[in-house]
Length: 227
Image (tube, rainbow, N blue to C red; front, side, top):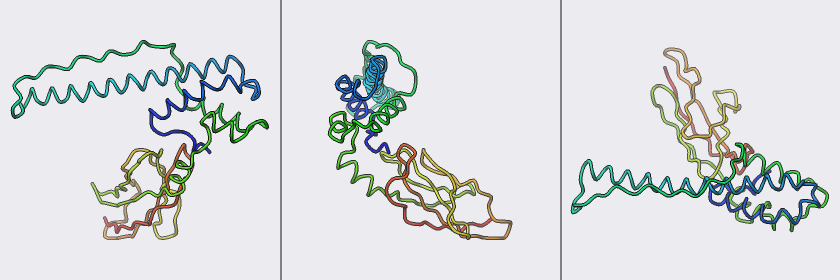
């Protein structure tokens, strides 16, 4: 279970920074080599660099959009409109391969599986779920809404901090797994009823976090479909 893993970029970078600043204290006890420590530290630095610069670029994009829109359409009481300066990015640290989170969680799994691991150590390294994380996961429940668009059922849902949802569907014979969706909204591409026929389709979903089910199933939503 990786419920300890922070879900926002900024919090994840801080979590990895905390972990890498303390792993030297425990690496020998957990059989983590010096090379692995160096590697995970490089991962933390490069991830933090990417997120910091992303925020600068994101702000620049918003400022440039505002500049462009005022230039194009004008705005009341605005007589001067200067293009925003390009952001100054931080110096690039040593590049690491893709998959920082996978390498981090793999190392954490090794640590947690070790006989020397304790909850206190995990809390110090920032790899134990906080009370807030635990409550938020236990109470998580997606809200679904069905609409017909283009002759297909669209399942509307909000992602929030979660990775996605697992969707089950009942076409009249009970709920079975339909699909996973990671980017709202979901389109059901199932074959519609034969011409002149109708059917009642039911859906429910549960949140996924790092591809594991968390929280409770949604309320069942129902829609009538015809061809």
